[in-house]
Image (tube, rainbow, N blue to C red; front, side, top):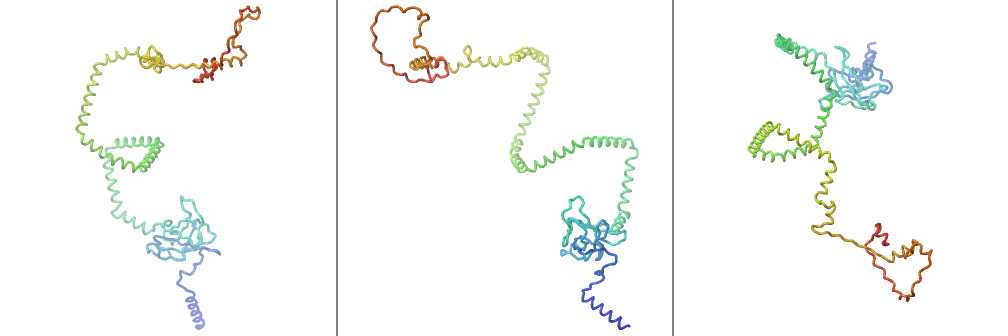
Length: 385
């Protein structure tokens, strides 16, 4: 019997050595998370893993969905990398966050996975993904809380709070009425500020726009300030003259005010006397403008300046008398070139003495065409084109 037990023990030790057994951390715990048929693995980077150990739980909404396979030091030796194996049916976004939490006050550590808060989920967490240090955090441990509390109670903040309370009591004692009035004014101020909240927000937005404009115009502002320095130096050199000028202006202002004060009645009377004249000028309207227009050329019209050049008038007139065209126009219109007198057809013609036939006159040459008179009355009568 002892030989059989020894043989079994030797076989177990041999099998463990051949399979790479590295301790009880690799042995699955009873009652752990169900990983399913196709789990996927994710690496998470923490700045501090505290006492997190392999086989610790991985939870989503306080439900176990996986376990910690390995905890190792990052290559930069400043953080820790935790390898997780998660059930393949668990759906998490690719930008999920990880937090190291504690199951109870003195309970075990576990890794809590959840979608990001305030950020739109992106993609899906899958095998081989990595959650960086920027998306991981941890809760404070009970030891840290108790340590901070001990520092507060052992001559730290509590003693300072006692001093502050004592000083406040000394300041408030005997000043109750003033403090109540101050609180009432503060309440009124806060109420007014709340009522003007939209205007305050608009003013802040305006300041933001002004700041952006100043940033965009920074180069021009720098150039302006650089060129402003010579002007400031000139003003500095002429400081005495500027002071004297301002002093003289103040004296002039005092004298003007005194003069106006003493002559106020006469000034008012003069203004009242001007009132009828100003009213008549206002009533004249456009007539005054027309009168001022013809005043420089009176008694001639306003456009006489184009004709009158000093003491003489310069006017050019051109007549175009095309007789041939005139006769043709009259013949085309059915008129006789020599109209008959009215009533001449009713009486026999008077006997006229025989006169010799006049010699035939040669045809008149056509006159050269002068300036066009089309569109005018004279041009239509003379047949000008």
